[in-house]
Amino acid sequence: MPTYDKRSQALVENADRKGTERIGPLANLWTRLAEDFAAEHEARYGYRDREGRLELVTIRVTATSPGAEVGLAAEPVPEPRRGRRAAARAELEVVHGPPLPGSEIAAPAVIELAESTVLVPEGWFARVDATGTIRMRRTR
Image 1: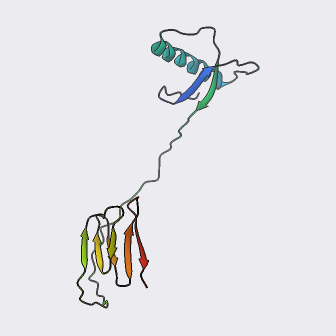
Image 2 (image 1 turned 90 degrees about the horizontal axis):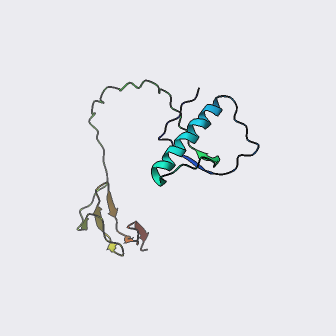
Image 3 (image 1 turned 30 degrees about the horizontal axis):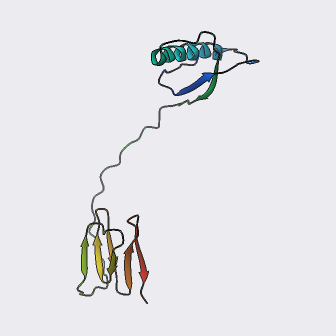
């Protein structure tokens, strides 16, 4: 027999149920839903409508099952890495934190954000739109 959790969000409203049959295990579920609705209605509004009929409009159901066992791998051992990058010394503007909407940042610049760092290289400029998004465009 299905179980019914009173915390489920079931929306019911007074309506005519002509021609609707209550058969099988759903008949018991319907009786429980109707009784719980009447009790909640009485708690909120101070009375039960004993003559009214109910129509189930929406019911949300959640089904769960156990997931697969998850094993954690051993921590990775850091490996030394070597690389070579072309570098040049340059004076640049450093913007600490997110720039304000409407800001324009000329190259060369670095914008230091909490989650990332944005480089504005020579030949580019950055403009911050109304939502705070940093948009970069070529100046050439």
